[in-house]
Length: 437
Image (tube, rainbow, N blue to C red):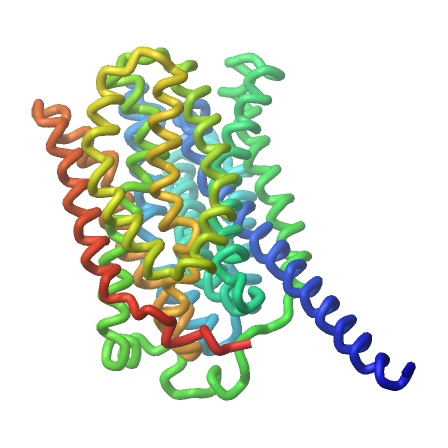
């Protein structure tokens, strides 16, 4: 009897050990993702305090525009980062790409934390600030595709949607953590202290946490194999566009709509509540902090849903519901006076967006074979995100300044229709990854 049961028990123990290792790998990979996005967002939240240190013009608006320009430059580096790190991940391993990415982000944060001001080194100060942001932009551009690829490959079969959803849990968590750190510093230090030196503290925190993430990522097991890494097509843009053009264009299509509506109801929404609805700045901040927290918590729920109904169904629901609710929700928010009602409307919209963001990584990873997976995911995401997501706020504010703010609502709606139509092209069962261990 003992001999009969022993293999079964051993097999069960091995399965349990394997599950624990995979869960730890998800935690280690996603913790690095949280740090990367914390470091990237903290710049935007602290810019108001350090702008004068690097751009000494007397006009505060010019200072903020200059820091915003540096922020945008980092954003535009994402496609290059998607290409470089996608190639590294496909040719030299996911783990190596993840390690280099977090080291680069750590370097950028440490540079900003230690940078001398304009008064000390003159024009070198803004030049070095730009260099640091370019490093961070490259890092974030490479982080998405490699993390999505790694998490999809290491996740338990049958629960890949659920586990992959933690990529956006940590992405949103990084943004929330950045807000929280700034709020705490505002309570501890005076305005003058923040403008003089305390603005450097979040960047030091970012660099330290990046080192912790690096140590965690060093424990990761590689998910790609030597044969795919040695393939002449591994990490090749030519091979990607020649053999997987349809998949690449499909990912571009639904990422364009997904990025646009994501930035509309997250980063732009606070400005919309203040500038359009006339809500006080602090009230809008409280509404958006609460909404983002709920949104973060929703990701695993919708990721698990995709494991039950399929990624294609999730994506089609996202496109269809996004097209139906965008105009009504934004129109209602235009005239909202109750913070509670605003919170409910935004959370409702973010629930629809969650149908996409919860499976954003896995639905892309399942479109490409392992030799070009990280490149296909990262490059397609970075291009669509930079063009459509990065421009969302500028398009919205530009149309508002021309007196046609409602045109932006319809712009988002049209892109949701595009996302729906593109999602109908998704196979009912993943062509790749579905049968991979």
